[in-house]
Image 1 (cartoon, rainbow, N blue to C red):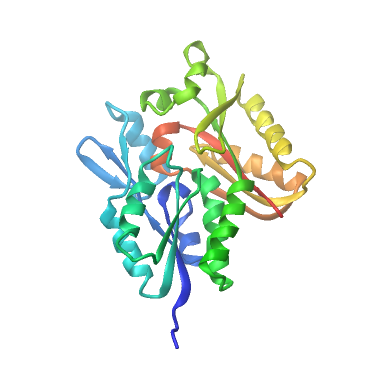
Image 2: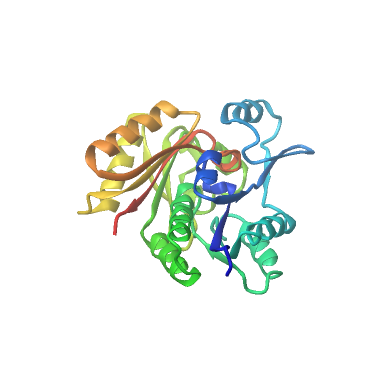
Length: 283
């Protein structure tokens, strides 16, 4: 009789799941990388403060890269030593080529690796990964787990607030958000990720207070008449702001889980400083 678990969970570093949490929940994280010139650094190797210090003094914006196919193959091989199958949940195909690397690697494992497109990023992805990990712990089948993750994908909502659009513009990832450029660069801008997994602009706000008020109003709109859910509040070089948002969320809703997280180097390369909230309403 096999002592292997039914499946293991793999994701990538754009989920912004802290190392300790990933280890505690049995989640394998495959890192993307950031490069300063010829020096390539795995996402997560630098602290947030170290990364921003380097980025702010670098002559050019660092570049980011998806994990090589081999990195996913190694992760899958290790996972399959203790599990029958793998559920691998990743950043939106519209925002990164990461999922293509995962799919190419998965094709070498005779159907034992199931790659799932979160159509999101950061904790919009992270909550889907957590659902997969919970399903694994509960002993669910892969099919049932993938259905559970798909339901979470439909429910999860992410808002990102940027102090500036400079990095997004420099990195060429701005897409339709370009309508917000020009003289508006000094404003706080909020974005979301739509059902196709692409960035969409939400609002422009004059100053931090207005930006955070808009964020809370957006959360209320997404929650509707639901009072209970799980929330993740992230930040790039602005922990006090994240804690303020988290406290306000906790005062207004029944919180199943509340995570405060740091945005990783790969995401911060494109967004610069700012904040984010990902919510998963309870079913």
